[in-house]
Length: 439
Image 1: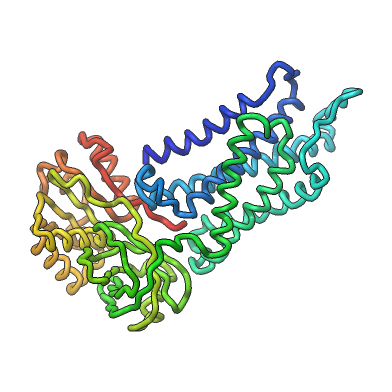
Image 2 (image 1 turned 180 degrees about the vertical axis):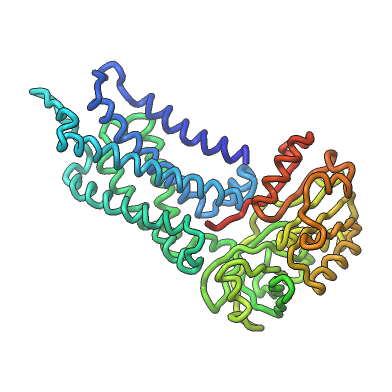
């Protein structure tokens, strides 16, 4: 999280610094209207920059995955950038429209027009009115799409479709920015940054529009078997790949696209890799899509697997590790236990598995995997044992503060543990977690 915050702040700071370096402050006269004339392009540049970086991250550039800590971190930063882009777009709109309203109400003196003033020429000036109108309507649509993205009760399959409109919307806003940004900016540092960002993000938007994102990492397969655990609503799905899979590390995930719906969804791989072409996924029925999935898939159904992604890889593995799983967060740990069993390399590992909906068959699978891999399993049924906290963890694993902690589970559970463990002396760099959220 700290790394993501630093990246976010660095993006904003870089834009502001380059903008500051691009302004000729020696001719700045001061007063409300000159300040407004600076804030209009600044807020617009911040808005389009945040949106451009969000579009670039949505294209899943695996080349920088390690630097950000995994694709799950991409999507957390993508969300922050999206919210920031909308916020700055609102501010940009208010700075542009607000003073005009105040003048009409008589609460603000009109902008003075100096005689003989030179009007700055913009490239593509003949498109100014079109760009302004398109930008305003695109702004209203951006607000609507952002509201739907943040509304958790909006069905995911509809969110998936509406969110894809962000790519063409970005291209419209790029046209707005290119036409209306002052000409002097394009020959200054801020202009050089905008040219690079807008060009790269335009390519990423094109990949999204034409369904090309992740194409190089897609592999064909078919569903070989599936089983629903009634006690915890977890669907186990077996997949046989028919094209060569590059292999994966335990803890990584992939996007699955079932032939029945054509929508890509991310799920953690719950099997180790034995070079057999077989993968397994354990999918919790949490939303409208995953709850409906057991009724829509069939054995032999075609499936596309895109991946592998993620850096939840249990490295370094040269010391004691404490794994903490909440609910379906057990999935990456099952994969890791299978990988340890295949390698015969049994480390010093404790696994705390907390579940509110125990299923006998599923728990038996977890116990079997733990026994085969030499992992010490601590099963917590919250209805019987209560919720997991640091006091209980210290009782089960007295040396927890000397271990690398790997957590996968509900966000609130992870936040509470991280805060308590930090107070207990655990360095933040030794608390590893997945942050994956599609919205």
